Image (cartoon, rainbow, N blue to C red; front, side, top):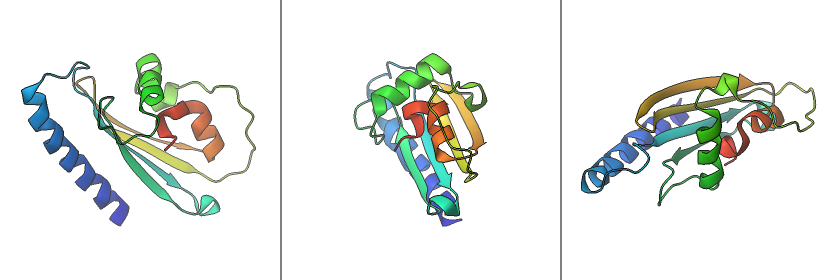
Length: 130
């Protein structure tokens, strides 16, 4: 529960921070501010990770350029992202990924559960690799 609170706080802080700069200089990408989260099963340590992706300077995502390229080519629908062909095991250790906010000015609220972290990364590429 506290992880969700941290995510909401991060979203609101980032929106207020970017809101002030957006008035000073219009965003070239139409306004991108996405909160990305990944919740891992107990098999993978039960970790909860979150970051903010803006596709601009000051971005918190460690692989910003590749993550933004993934969204630009595949869109924001997690269910339609195609796997990259890597071989993954069949062990079941579910990973729930979520993204919400705005992509190029359009609202996004996506949640999807993959059977394990390898499958999640195979489908989402750099987007949830943080």
